[in-house]
Length: 494
Image (cartoon, rainbow, N blue to C red; front, side, top):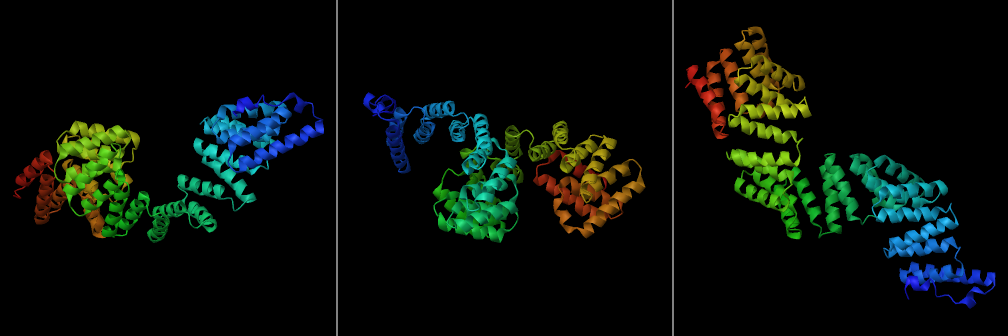
């Protein structure tokens, strides 16, 4: 019999029973309802509570009990009616407000849910379930500090409460507080060591703190517990790759794709390894597959842009950087990469536009100040160029390319002492920091070559300028390559 039909099924003779006997019957029907609900037989529970309500329409707890089973059956409209009825009978009934909060939560009306649960807590400050409900609502609202406050209250009263411990750990994880997240995931695992998810998240925390060995232990354990989950293999593959185990990493990426052929990020991860091996055709194939599965996958667009730049297909690389900026118009790195391609095409006005766009987002961007300085210098704007290179040096004092360029400008402006100061400082930094040599592109090599020439080191200058020409040719930086070759010829360094 349906819930609505049961509402009117009680016979008049039952209502003529003595009050004590009616109360006993009500209690009996409610107990039956509780037993049915405990066994998840919610329709039978609803029918029992309905009979109890027919005997005593003012018994607010029966409405609340029936509403709980209605929620289990996702009959939220009728459940809300029952809780509202209970509140009309007893306006201070905390469990009814708590129940309404659950309904609004399920209906994704989080603002209304928060109002109801706050009212429930005001009326009953010792009910742990209300705090758990509020923490879940605030998770949906993204209010991390309030989640942590509610979890703190719960764990102070019930340290072994698994949902609160989990939510506390996940909140710290989402906030980037990885040490605190590790502590809480560890506490959770002390209570339930067979949780693959907890090992997974704790492993990711270790990875982000550069504790890769501990990360690997957790990911291995997660895979032991859940060997058919693709994401676990993909994340372990990343850790193995960071540890230099490329064979193991590739095996994990292969396994992840076998388990989930639609996992775009795993193809992008495989592309990483192929790029490191210099196998650009396979890397490009993996990027294309990743982008086919997820057109918004930023990593794959970057990888494809890098590959196409390396093989000299600048127009294809440019298309990827256009796409990245469409995805996120504040992606500074995409603007920089696009700016360099514009530079290599000789489109200096477009370079300047991109650099200015970056500096509007972050005026301390060293690459943007540097690249802007180069195009200003090549356009004859020497004072503006000095300003841009100076900004780059302020934010990165060891940036030797900017020092060499600024020194050249000072030399052109007959500020010889300033020029020599920049040249000698750049050389001193090179002597102390050999790793800075890897950061030079064709423009940096060109500037260093000219600086060496002005320092009287003609042979070293010839080597450096010719190296700059080779790099420019490889990168199809045709306009700048012509500039280098003109300089080599003018200085009789053919």
